[in-house]
Image (cartoon, rainbow, N blue to C red; front, side, top):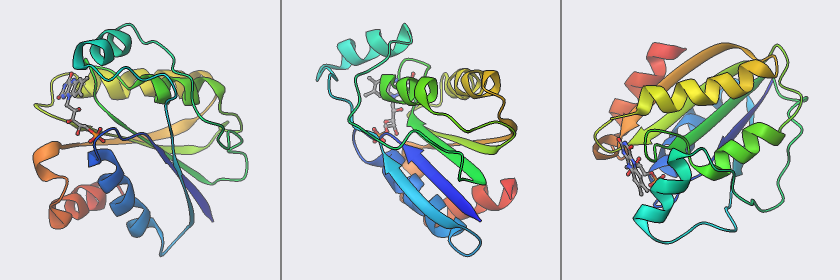
Amino acid sequence: MKAAVIYYSYSGNTRAVAQALSAHLKGEYEVQAIELTALDEPASFLGQCRRAFSHTRAQIAPVDLDLSGCDLICVGTPVWAFGPVPAVNTYLDRCSGVENKEVILFATCGSGTGNERCLQYMQGLLAKKGAKGFKRFSIQQSKVKDKEFILSRLKKIF
Ligand SMILES: Cc1cc2nc3c(=O)[nH]c(=O)nc-3n(C[C@H](O)[C@H](O)[C@H](O)COP(=O)(O)O)c2cc1C
């Protein structure tokens, strides 16, 4: 069984959760981790918020978009202005081979405001492409280094 763990991380939190998820999956799956790189990310908080709020798409570095060989697809993002980051939007627009695939969506967040809206938006993009069986979780930034906490969240969804 193969799993892809696709994520974007600006300051490391989502990467930490993606790594914990990958480690958790490794008993059952061969895991391919794909970290997205945005080529046109503004450095300012306001610029990042503005683009994320309007669901802008980013330019991303070349990456594997064909997920047809995967049994499980995991996609993670930081919550920015109540939505996914632009690089994740781009990936979800462009990826292929997700029909009838099981999906895990995850987000890391500050206060948690907007994390459901964010995950719902991601789910909508993949549902349009025929993915099914969505599971979702989010982790607050204060908990990303707490491996026991993350494990307890993962056990709830598996
Ligand atoms: C531009 C920007 C917008 C953010 N907007 C939100 C938000 O709407 N809700 C929230 O709970 N956290 C928000 N945060 C906090 C991030 O979601 C949180 O710090 C996340 O863990 C960062 O992940 P990363 O370290 O992988 O980049 C925002 C952070 C940034 C930089």
